[in-house]
Amino acid sequence: MSHAGGLRRAGACLGAALALGGCAGIGSKGSAREGGTIEIGVSRSLDSLDPGVAASAAAREALWSVYTPPVTYAHTDQVKLVPGLASALPRPTEAGAGYAFKLRRGLRYSDGRPVRAADVAYALGRSRALSGDARRIFAGVTRVVTNERTRRVRIDLRRPDPDFPHALATTFAAPVPRSTPRRDVTGRPPPGVGAYVIVRSRPGRGFTLRRNEASDLPGLPRGYVTEISARPGGTADEAIDGRLDYVQDRPAASLLPDMRSKYRDQYSEHVGLATLALELDARRAPLDEKGVREAVARATDPHELAVLAHGFLEPSCNLLPPALPGYKKLDPCPGGDPEGEPDLVKASDLIESSDATAARVTVGAPASDRRLADEVVSTLRKIDLRPRLVARGGQVRLVRIAPLLPTATGFLSPPARSTHADPGLVPQAVELRREPDPDRAAQLAAELDRALVEAPAVAPIGQEKRPALLSRRMDARNCAVFNPVYGNDWASFCLQ
Image (cartoon, rainbow, N blue to C red):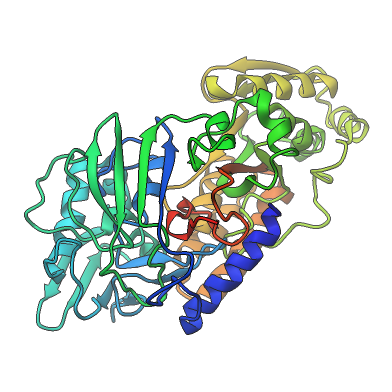
C-alpha cells in the first residue's frame, strides 16, 4: 500500500462526499464495497465502551463510528470540524460566553427512540459525573438550556472560549437517552447515533458492532462492512495470515523492518496529535542564558531519538502537528534540520561563550521514556554540561504534549507559561486563547509556534506516529482513512 497515495485517494473521495455526497457508501444508499464481516484485534488499553467514560485512544477510535456528538471531525487526515448531530457548526451566543446550535430534524437512536435536545444536556452532566477528563473539558460550562420544540441547545460558559466547539466534538458530548444510568455501562452500552451499533459487549472478552442501516447523516460515512467483531489483543502475525483483519497495537519491534518493507501494502504509519519535545526551564542557571538553551536545542538529535522510539516519531522542528490549523513548517529550523546531524561543535561553542562549561543541569523524564532520557543526558555531556537525571521536574524536561482537545492553544500555551524563556510568550498565548476568528487564530498559532522555538523555550523532537496493519482481505488502497483525532476510521474499512 502506498500510504500517502491511499490517503490522497480516500481523502479526495471523502472530501467530495462532504461537498457533494458523491462517493458510494458515504451518504449514498448502496455500494459494491458494502457487506461482509471483519475481525479486529483491539488494544488491551481500551478502557470502556461507554461514551461518557471512555478516555483511551483505542476506545475513542472504536466509539467514533457509534456515537456522533453535536460536532465531529471530517473523516480525513486533517483536523477539521464539521456538523455532527447539529444542523450547522455551533455559533457563539451574543455575549460570546457560550454556544448555541440546533439538532438535525428527525434524529433517532439506533433503537428507534427520538433524540431530544435535553439528551445533550443529560450527556454532558453524565460525562462530567463519570469522567475526570470530561470534567476538565466542560469545566467552563455553567448552564445548558434546551428547547424541544425548536431543537435548540444553548450552552453558557463562564467566559468566552473559542476552542469550546472541539469539546462538543468529543464522544463525551454525544447524546444518550436520559434513561442511561450514571455509571459505566460497558457491559450494555447505550444506543447512539452513528454508522454502527454495539450489539454485543463482553467486558474483557470483546464486542461486536453491526452497521446501522437507518444511519443517514449528511456528509458522514454510513459504513461499508456489515459487522465488526473485536477481541482484545491480536498480533501482527494474525493480520498477516488473515486471522485478523486489523490490529490496533504496534507490531513488535523485531517485526518492524518486515512491516515497513515486505508488508508495506498492508501496513502504514500516520502522524498523530502527540508531540515529544524538550522544555527548557529558564528560571535557573545555566538555562537562564539564551546561549545555553540554544546549545541544547542545536545538540538535540530528533533523528536518533526517533530511532530509539522504533521509528514511531516523525522528526519535526514544530510543536504543532501538521494536521492542526496554524501549522506552518519552520524552514529553516532555528535549531538545525531535524532530519540532519546535530551541530555539536556550534553547541559546544555556545556553552563556552556563555561561561557554562561543566555547569550542572537536571534532566527530567517519565520512567517510560528512560531510553530517550538517557540519550538526552549523553548528548548534554557531549557539549560540556554535567547533566543529572531526576525523577521529577528538571531544567530540561522531556515532555509528551497531547492535550485533551486538538487545538493550537493546547499545544502551545503550556510551554509558553512554564518555561519562562521569554516574557513575551505568555501574552501571545493569551491572545491566541481569546481569538475568535479561526483565520486570525491560525496566524497567531504559527507565530507562537515559531516564537517558542526561537526563544528557545522548547526543542521539538517530533510527532508520534500511529500504525495501521490490515489483512490482505481488506481494500487498504481505497478504504483506509486515518483521522489524527480519532485514529483509524472503522467506517471507511471495506473488503476487497
